[in-house]
Length: 245
Image (cartoon, rainbow, N blue to C red; front, side, top):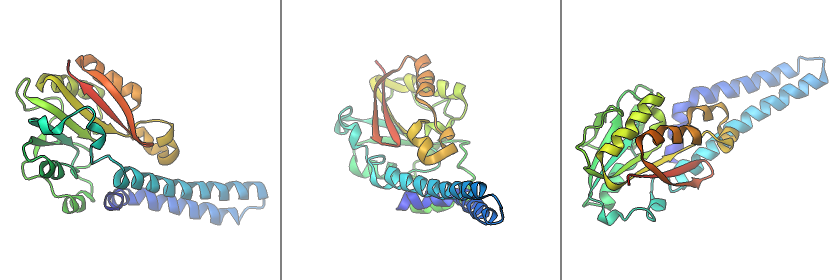
């Protein structure tokens, strides 16, 4: 429940607004003479509450019960025992790097926080950093200019981070930079929610914050990197495996 609690903390204003609107609709329904409109308002109110519950349930499944931060699904593409250099990119929330370093002590891991992402100044970020302390070696980066030498990295990890690069051209530049710093045969692992039917059902308009499959392809294609796998890790999230040939 750790990460789901953070989801509630980051979105409590929207949750309270939804509950408030639902209560307003219920109260208003009893003031109407039309039975049809009264039923309509009550159904609308129930749907709002159900959507809040559904989004929290989906968050719990995605963040607290799935493989999202375990990366077991990546083992068919990567032998972690043979990886020397890796970059982990996050957006002011890092539950993964310390776990990776503990699991693979030989790994030379550089942890990068995307500078200027929307979470930096949110009220809940300090709480999240207490629950998941930042890696002491963490650096801040601009996603369109990665501070690494050419052909220096085996793997780039980005778990629920790259959708925070809101500008399409900056995403394109990120993947071009990623290609530059990756060794031949190097891999990018991207775990993200997609703007798809399932996420619209469970997260409603919140799904607009995610990228569609078409947008991911158009962001990656100009770099010349190859998407070798797109697989579901939960009903709500995909893992993209992108390779430099």
